[in-house]
Length: 222
Length: 243
Image (cartoon, rainbow over the protein chains, first blue to last red):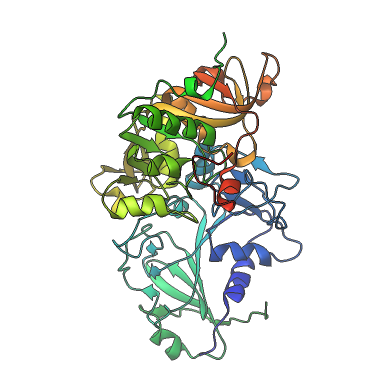
């Protein structure tokens, strides 16, 4: 089955970030979204550990370890950067000041429930800022492979893994489709043109509603 | 008024067995490595303090700073949001062996609990963690049609904090994103102990630029050229450090 690469999923998510938006990207895969900002649009990135408007990673050897992102990777400051403490940082998150948060997922339910912090009781649990980020941002989007490594749906009726948040996700960008969550249901907006609706439904764990036209999900090689 | 103390050993002398100690920093940024190491030195010399409850965002990295404090066996319980790192072996082994307690708190809730502790607010409501395992047993209330989880304040006997500069009144400025939890922990601790690169005379800091007003600070000690945890770990350092 044809599918988008991680870079292509990130590219597609970046196209929906408006000029002037305040954005938080989850650690790991979602960080890629920053690389694909459309020309002429400025997004201002927030990191939980207290920086607004940070820049890209410095060249190796030029890291300043007091200037890092939530994944503890070195970033840079740029004209217009602001520093603040953790309570202010999460006031930005919970207080509804961020326009978009883009996160990874183990599972997303048609109810908008998200599971992305724990794969179960084994090992050391760690949550970080994930449970805060799913509340407060005006849009909470997920980027993910459409299915797990062994082919099971990641878009499901109800999450089986421990929840990060309830009814919080508004849009999902997958390797096969763009799907909104409205009224507790998956609503298909875009799919790969080579993929039939039946084939897409077969790898999705809950019903896809198709109330309107479905656009072709066409992404350049990036 | 002069809150400066002569050396690191004096700075941490009041920390006793069983205390709750907040330690600033997010990963290595803003981590008061020298104060932590001074506490380990005291433990090695006297067997105290031990059975500490430590509040930090993380659980240490490698074998220096907080990880070394845990490795020394001084920590009974950790309250944190993300006990993982590039090299979390010290905490991971103790936790999986059942030899250290963990209270896992979402990062924003952790920050707000500490802020509330310093601000005299015994509890507050947050949307964070509603409907998840981390809200189990906590009261839930609906406001304006949305459910919120009640969380309690967090206070400490002492805080170990890193800032960039202080004056003798304990007014503090920080460096870049090394600020993170440090200003909140100064507020929430009975005794905020701060290491700074520079101590300046009163008037040496711009009053408009003070991040932590001195009323929240009890002790200041100068550490002119502090270690950065990330640099130590990239050099595979372990505490005690080789000269």
